Amino acid sequence: MIYKLPVSEFFYLRHGQTTDNRDGILTGGERDKGVHLTEEGKAQAESRSGWLVAKREITLICRSPMARVDETVQGMNREAQKLVIEIPNLIEWRIGDYAGMPEGEFGEGLSNFTCDPPGGETREELKRRVHDALMECFRIETRGKVLVAAHKSVGIAIKENLGITRPDEIENCVPYKFFRVGNAWDYQPELL
Image (cartoon, rainbow, N blue to C red; front, side, top):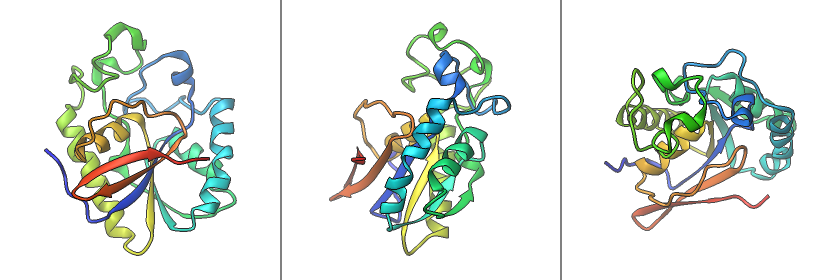
């Protein structure tokens, strides 16, 4: 199902590198305590500060309530001082039994978003939740552009919800611009 959005453009950013990213551990929405940005992740966030200052059209940052996203937004928003609102439905995919396990044990299905994790949220549940979160962001901000700061699975859900099928990787702390092209959607990384 392709979801409709009431905007023609918005921005998305996955959090900076975490200890679990570095160590190859599946984090999921169940694990927040003890999962923080690495020094590299903090540097990534701080290096995006100039980009955020230059993006005057961004007037609101909607972020996941998870610590790794909060740390990322704080690092990149020190100078710009954009309004930040926490959106609970932007948390990471709840991956049930897979949370805290090494990535390699489950093949590509989970990381490629092609299987439903046992004891966790289905892909369709995630996609509906992410759509609801985006709609909440766009109800709050009607004049400027929104930056959605969240997680890899949220970015994948956004792509699928908008009918984007390219299998590009969603990198840590790279801002992406999502935009309409006629009746379709596309996205691209922002030049830094």
